[in-house]
Length: 424
Image (cartoon, rainbow, N blue to C red; front, side, top):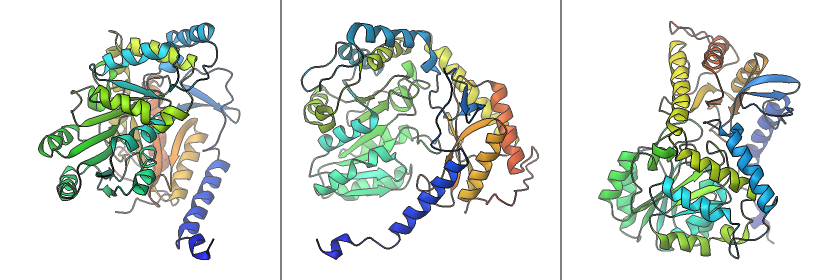
């Protein structure tokens, strides 16, 4: 092999070195790669390094992971079907799959549903099948990394894949019009709720654009939008309007849904059948196991019940409590869109680590976000709000962040020396 083929672009190794160094520093502070020490979970707290902390890092927004009905259903599925069903779905599926997908179809308004082993594996099956060699792909620069993981295969087939400005429908339409001159269809890949800052897709704008541009097809990852949001918990997109004829939506079943897998919602049965029969991760990867299927069936039944709006109201009240307190304390929140994800900008990576470490000392576990998950010098704290947390937990956390940052209710902010304001 020639040395030219082994050459690495200038700067790549330096970026890797910076990422490793930051990761190592965060791990040394107890912020990453930790193992919980609890003998059992209550959902609200987590034990790390001998200390019990209020957990603001869980994406189980409805708090269903501790629901007795889901735990019982998982145990009963194991007693009936064993701890695993070791067969590819290309040959045979465990009995609960049919019930699970039928119930999920009811949840999303009767459209066909294919359950993948995870959202990530769902993308890797769906996108290479949906996108043809004559198509082009546009993807939001902040669409989840698991969606972007399917792009290399498309590029190898000669499909042009181009990033577009975040959540900018006007710019998206410009590129759709331009690419439509040479390509049969243009696919737009985006999130329903963007997982880092918690900002929400312009769903109405996207539907209007689909109506105006007949060559456009939208693929939406709504992993963080389901359960806590929309009718029947169908999420940011499908919980408020029907699936567009040129749209596919995938939502995760391992976060707020408290089960496992990813549900691909397709506009017609032909596409659903093609993904099941042609999608490589559908064919060659293992299935969801009986316990996961049992919990999933119990969860979707709860979503279809009259109890769901009460559970959703609990999450909404916690979002509102955080936003009220955060505005009073003038916290630098990246997005105020209605979402259980809140991002506190800190700037430099060291500033974010110092802030997270200070909160750890005060009894709060939060997720730190830094390069390469976010651009350099745009680091911060990523907080997730869920039904387990109390209003007092949230108000005290906000007060602790404000104390660490030096903000006040009057808007005066004396930033500590280790905190760098976000550029721009």
